[in-house]
Image (cartoon, rainbow, N blue to C red):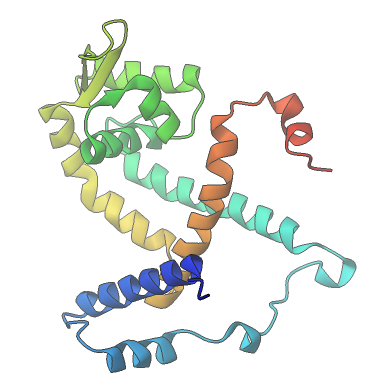
Length: 220
């Protein structure tokens, strides 16, 4: 009996989607299998052919996990540096101000806790940001039609105007963060980071106390 490998099929479909996006980016149609095969040959190196990278401290036993953790922390700091450039000479107090507005613009009305969880923040911090945005008239709150005990929030026309004014700077900062990566490298990085997101987000949503987190995950 033949059993289909659905994980493999999904990877192939995702790869075909990347091919279509790359062709559209240069104003061309993704219209042939031959073009698809040529694109794969040009953009992807077999895993076994890739040399293992070197890193500081490798010879002394520094683990790849330690390097990954350090690099992610460093990238977060670089991104914050560019975010500070975005909010300079604006009414934004922190980068979370415009990130909250972007999420409301893209995803529409939602509860306060939905917005806070979307931004991976604790409730007190998220509530402070929401209160600040409300005081400036950038968002509004209304009673939830499904639960009269809670309130939904949405971006106002004024909030959209403020956000749109800064979007060119936000887009430029995003481009800088991705640095000198090629298109195929960006697609590969998105797939890798998405895999990490799928791993960590459920853990975050469990709201485990920091003192019990590593034990709960059986991390030694």
